[in-house]
Length: 153
Image 1: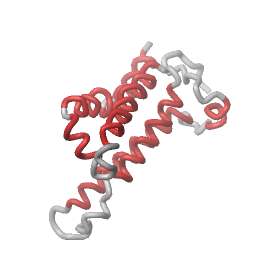
Image 2 (image 1 turned 120 degrees about the vertical axis):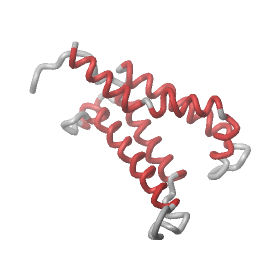
Image 3 (image 1 turned 90 degrees about the vertical axis):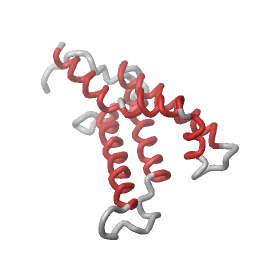
């Protein structure tokens, strides 16, 4: 029981940025989210990007929390974190990374790194702490059964 609670708490901490916070922000500030998406896509496509983002930010964390196809969901979330870092956390764009004092480039850099760190956490769900990608590749939509007691290796 303690291991199951620890597994749930760990997963809850990993996904809480997306569900509920980022998803709720997109719902409550849909226009602002569309404006942000318009930075990288045509205005006509931006609402669809936000809807896709909402689907990812709601459905994938739920799958990870419930253990339902959690490895596949975690792989989607890892990709989502890396893609959003590359599209919206472009620390190289402001041109002030090496400037002394406060720098938008350095602020974006830390957000960029955090996104990739989150991706690493999700990839631990995909492959497990022992890097067992063969199990995932053999059954990509299987559950990792995060809340069952496992015998020590």
